[in-house]
Length: 305
Image (cartoon, rainbow, N blue to C red; front, top):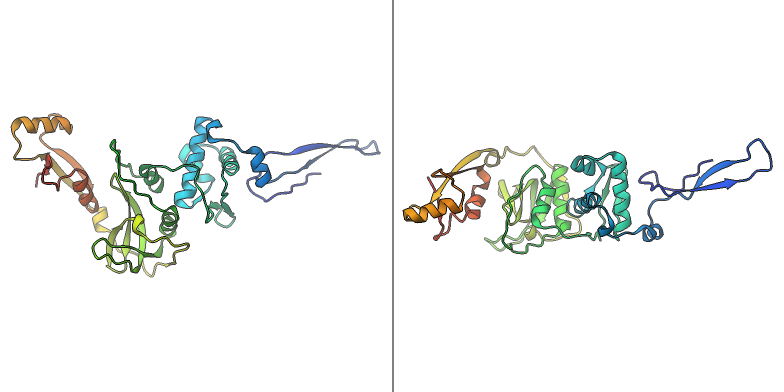
């Protein structure tokens, strides 16, 4: 006889095999499997382990899972399988390990077949902005930086709601503080993608208020427990600036001496070329100019227009 006392998903392998004695000789022995459970409060305490105790490969998977639940607000086995090329069984084991480590377990949605982070979700670690960006948009390579960057603490609740709206192709109402006007009026936007300039993460979205695509800093969006969303009233217009590629030719500033220009070419890796070519999206030219400090008066570089 097999008795399962658990929910139908994510069952850990703990079980007991009990010997049962009968008075007759036809079936003197039977196996009963009992006490099969999902990881609750008592069992999680018994199975709790530190991240440091895990092997490096599994620790990386657990941290990735934690970051998915923190910044995306959701995760499933497929996320682990696609990221680390592991089996379904290994992904299920990683989920069970994560559940034994967290004090704020996610909630499983049988319809979506995914776990969703709880309102009081507490991350195991705090990743840097580049890790967060790669998590939100793994198809884009972020720019590295070797100097200390300003601390831009985004609220994971805000980012997770934006991500869900983007993945569900829904509009979301935000309250955004503009640095130009200083106003914080509610407005409807339709999120389409995240991008990263090397220092801060931006959300590119269609603005119904401005009737154009604009970039928003999630850090300036007022935190709300649950932002209102709606079905898009119509397909979005084609984002021409995002889908148009431009070439930027960068050279040493024209008023430098020959010796200074040679030093700049050496510093910025020009090799034997007179210019550096950067290919980027038209929508990101502003960020390239600012990132390379081409708009500063004392810049060593300039655009060859």
